[in-house]
Amino acid sequence: MAKFYTDLSQSLVDFIQAQSLFFVATSPKEGRINLSPKGINTFRCLAANQVAYLDLTGSGNETSAHLEENGRITIMFCSFSDEPLILRLYGQGHVIRPHAPEWNHYVSSFDLLPGTRQIIVLDIDQVQTSCGFGVPLLDYQGDRQTLLDWAKAKGDEGVRQYQQQKNQHSIDGLPTYLLESSERP
Image (cartoon, rainbow, N blue to C red):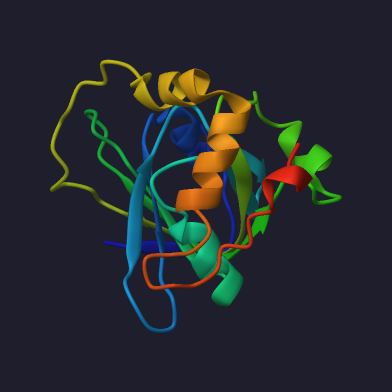
């Protein structure tokens, strides 16, 4: 049976901190829904009603484009261990880029990683838990290093060039508002 809350309790924060994987879902007003798995210790609970994750450079930048358009975001955690639980965080999100005045405030909660692109912040409107009885039992073997190794090999300038070529628009053509490489740190 699903239960709803207005913010995160300490037990839910503890659950989040024990997870190695989360999923981010956003959608434009018209176009494709985006659902992305995330990991690599990039998620932080900032307050009972605010969370954030360090967004690394990837093949697309859908979340940024969708948040710029309408702000809607859902983040989901699910347990793959003996204690089943699904946790969804619903709310309004926004993107914090390295040039933003609030960047230093938010980035202080993270260890910067190769390929860091931006921080996604979710102001929570509602929290939902549900049973998770249908989620399989899986064993965590560790984080993949492929994305971090790729960003290290490209170097800062190579990552900036990649962002300029591949991360400026969503697959539906919405702008992501990444800065020109000359303005990036």
